[in-house]
Amino acid sequence: MDTNFTILAIETSCDETAAAVIRGGRMIVSNVVASQIEEHRRYGGVVPEVASRQHILTIDAVVRDALHPLPGGWNDIHAVAATYGPGLAGALMTGLNVAKAIAWMRELPFIGVNHIEAHIYANWLLTDAQPDAPEPQFPVVALVVSGGHTLLALLEGHGRYRMLGQTRDDAAGEAFDKVARLLGLGFPGGPAIQTAAENAPGGVTLPRAWLRDSYDFSFSGLKTAVLHQIREYRAREAALQPGAGKRGASAATEPPPLPPAIVARLARAFQESVVDVLVTKTVEAARAFGAAEVVLAGGVAANLRLREELCRRSPVPVHIPPVALCTDNAAMIGAAAFYRLNAGKQDGWDLDVQPNLPLHAG
Image 1: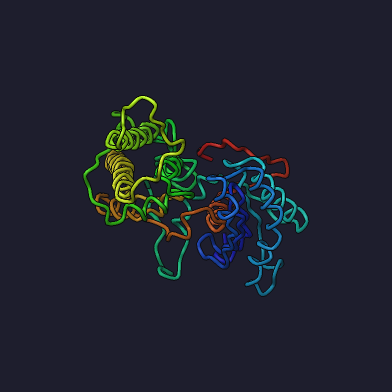
Image 2: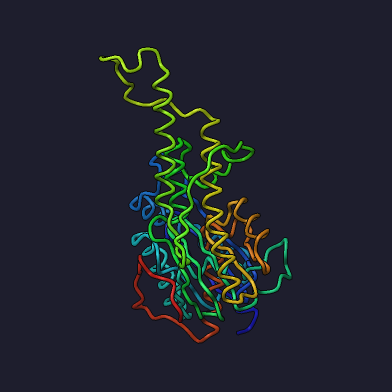
């Protein structure tokens, strides 16, 4: 397709209401994201009903802001795209139905986009820092790490995927959130743990679930290991208190916060364990399948330790989007949509949301 082909893309799979205008599959004309983090922080996680309501309240303004840089406004849009899965059903419905309505009203092609695939295509987007960056070269091994997904895939070409491995329980981002809650660090967990782990001393080593002869991941046991470390620390502290062990001594109903030094050590050990497993399996896959490049994608790709370690250990060049394109956004939806449409793929008005949509070829 023409490199001036312009797509309006909408993303509402979870708790960000986003719209973007993408030209030629790579150039970001606009990328607007309305975050709901403050709405959900009080609950310690995303509440689906709250997310859906906020999307409805926000999406009109977000789309208008995304169109603002276009001199011709709607007349400069050649196609419309939106996420149809995976994600929260109610949240997905808002963005998908708005996108279909716009495409139908303006008689434009409509493209439904897989959210996981879109995270990978964030690596195709151009940025101000690298306005002439080349496209990733196939075959590519992609590591996708986010709050809902952790997987390794081999891309042999646009739309040609081979699943290599995925999480058997918690996704990496989900594990970050749960461990942050255990450590009293709040929500979202990824940035909180990264900050707590900075300059933290060693002294604590947590297990790695290697799942040998497999590219699968498992982080549930690691979360449990952190919980055991916390309980052991509290038990030692309780034993040192005056009157410990005496009959009738009452325990506090709510344990006191963990000391910052303990939180920092556990945060560092947890982060090191997650990063070690993610990087080791990615490097092994890149070697085994003769990858020309590795791409990192998803919200957890914003983790600085993961970025540094993957670049240090990878045997081939590594593509990593800027932090703003790692978390959910609509620019990546537009990029993925361009390459789907370029391959002759288009969707009809009967496309429905698929909350559990897997990454698949085609």
